[in-house]
Amino acid sequence: MDLSGAQWRTSSRSGSTGNCVEVAITEDGVAVRDTKDRTKPPHIFTRREWTAFISGVKGGEFDL
Image (tube, rainbow, N blue to C red; front, side, top):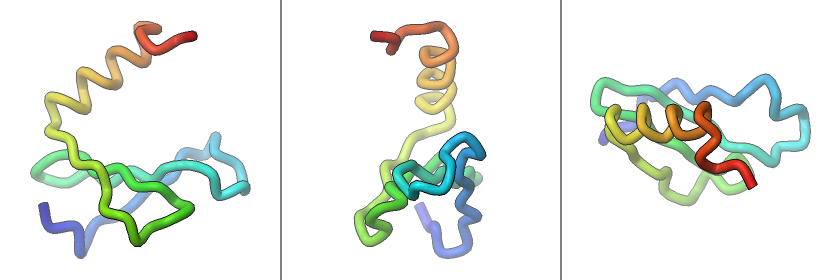
């Protein structure tokens, strides 16, 4: 996935600590990277994988 022109977004809920992730939506899928170390390669997800993850979050699958 070519991320050279990606527009990375950070959640408004992350505050100003810098301890969060950024997300870039592309034609091919979704990329997620750590804001503390942007030199590391991002995690890449297909749109189907991302949709399943978001559904799981909203459905409480990851609640402790």
